[in-house]
Image (cartoon, rainbow, N blue to C red; front, side, top):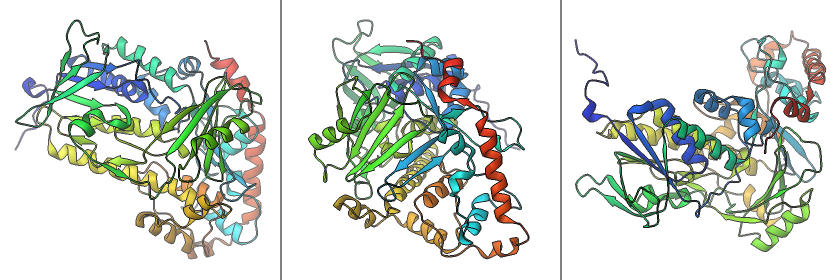
Length: 516
């Protein structure tokens, strides 16, 4: 019988040194989790330059961020206080279906599944029979968000108040600083500096050394060696792209937006526990409420809007006095052809970018890190591990890409050239087949490992008035149920329970006020 070799038996194969190039959320999330998971046997060094800075506008998240923080052992209230954080229960989409229309994509499930069928099937049946309430009204998160209230989910699994989920809005630069303090407490070493050259091993093709600019603060030394490198250098992809030559696959033909302009403003209204996404004639604008300010941005296509027009539109529509100068950002939508090549993995913008419509940027950082933790190599740099990492990451990026495309494809808008273009884009076959299946009888085939589940897809499809041609035949046998009465009972239960919750602002003030 063969014997599994213990990882402690051959220390010569252990990776002993890791260098992370780039800070920001990607770099410090990576440093924190690797230091937590790998312990003291691996030396971790992060190189970043204050002169380069970060994009730093990704302030909205989705629920899995809570699990990432939990694994690190981070206290939620301490984190929210430090990062100027607020609660996020949903994303509200305004003018996406048509001008003047709005709907929410709430977090968590809709009502409760019963009789082996998920709740949306029952809602589709009721809707086909003339029932008037929207699907979102059966989300407990929607009831809280609509009334600017919050309380943590109930621990009673039988309560409808346990069916929702939540995430956060926060200052991304503060989050990076929070994790830097955490990482350095676990022994991660930070070097202030810029990489000027990347040396490759002539035999293996692996990265062997990084040369730093002469003014870098590295104890008098301007060369860094390591066994393993992580590229968090942003869209340039200094290591994976420039040095190792891994190409970039553009998705610009699916997602037109390639620019953004961001500005911070003072609060003028109630602090809402949800993100707003407001579509306009050539893109959309975000509104992200933090405790002491509002984050605002305009995401648009340079084919249909100039920088000057984008900035003017943003500044003319914000709801309070500006606190910062507008910041213009160029981006490329797509992904690297590989995410792990040789002894280098790309995390964050160096791996790829999908516009922040569904707040997935920090999640893709998080999932890339956790996938690396699970598949962490030894010095052999197994090609099998690399292939699994790359294949899994491609599937994740493509599934999220399709979900984002859905928002543009499902629109009824034809009031501008931009929206006419969006509605006529030849979408990926993977999305075509999913929509085709849904349009027959309301079925959605979602793989277990996909980020966006059945309820997420239903929120957007139903929210943008995309309904199946007929209800699934299996639902014909559910006639014994008084559907209208049951749905009204669920709605009233949620409404009454949510009414007792405290306001979002009161919850933050009591539990996690920002400490400047």
